[in-house]
Image (tube, one colour):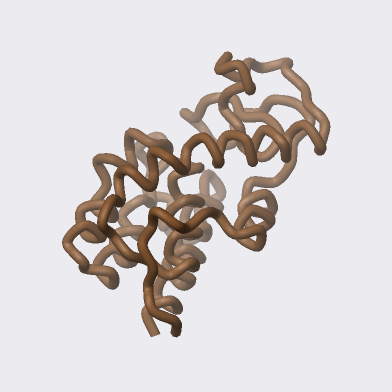
Length: 168
């Protein structure tokens, strides 16, 4: 694996953007993806470009939804880089953490064990910390056979596997 590089020069890869869009799944109309969640639209957007929250009944098109997702990520990356000032990552690690942050938000990222571990240089521990985020509305989504939020858990397993692959 190539050497890690400073986060200041990284940005979300095109491959990761496509993966994020596939994981989020497109919806033309606002939905509530899991019990206790807020309405999302397009590729999981919770807000419109002007900052208004998505409301039930809102609609979009695939082109507008992808543009909104990219706009959100590009705006969010400056804060992500700031939070990781002085940290070096592989592109694959950066992509995983941006994807996580897109789902869970900036405030959860700033308080996450992943961020603490990355700042300490504990890359494997940061990967393992991804598995702590397995709850939705207080329910453990890793419960075998659950039909309530299995996607939350399978997405974490996928992120963990991608993160661990970058450690080789």
